[in-house]
Image (cartoon, rainbow over all chains, first blue to last red; front, side):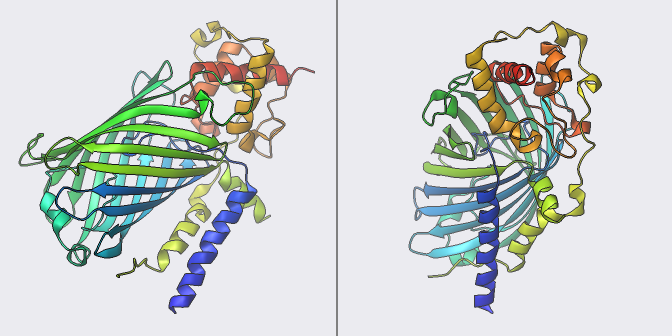
Length: 293
Length: 133
């Protein structure tokens, strides 16, 4: 039975790789790891990403976290994404840490001075999750010291809402997110935020094909952290992070992101190194439909 | 060592996502005469108009961002309009710029405001020269 499951997984991955190899594509251009901007997935485009991180907590074993992501542009105003997460803690082993399903809706279509996006996510995860897709509430450094076997038994069902505002101006993107998260098992609302800005290193592109020219890079920074909960709102006893971000589009089809993230409060993981590889297939939905004809 | 475990249904869920019936196509885009752009857009001027370098740069951008829908030669596809027509060539450059930047959600055309203005003008340069005979 286990072998059958493995075959199924491998054949799924093989099928996806085949599609990837057969289709023209362009890599995504979001350099942020936590902050969302107002740009949605193009309609009928599908995006795959894998984002590994290595964290170095102060008084606990270092961890490796991996996040696999599939996103799809349902409409020009609606993007949906599914995430699968796992982590490995040195000396303790690994665990699958959960699944998330997010939806983003853009109510105003053309560009405005400020562009809002509404975000809704359902997460079925366990306490061993180390994906740091966002940071909310108060920090609990002792949680990182708990044995992995215990953490993965603690299942959480969460609803997360975000208000995303973002603006492009003279090549810069500036984005801010306000986050509200509710553990559905009788825990209070927790809050967080993320701020980000970035810019391509060249605004116009050169006529020649090139891999290392400035137009293929975007650089910026993110600031994100918790804002307490409904009983104690604010920065007190929270985790806060400052993280430069860099994106390199190394092929029309693929992008690489990296971000050294620095914890700037006592409750933060002092250092995390985050990476991401992204691949996007344009007009995937229509291609899939045409295969059936 | 404890191996990570993944529920068996998840690969199927991931695969089924793009097959869902809610992935119906939006209304196909109309021609340039259907574009609804503000009057001020018509006053925008292309700083790269007619320049070969920027046409080639625009071609590179076209292949990267537009060809998956509009075709490698800009000839369009079943429900997606060609960009080689006289309508595109004769369109006001400012309106073309505005349309690419903002898109038309009802027609399924995404906005490309993520691109700097300079790159959108390079695309306009390419599109208005690609349709020349």
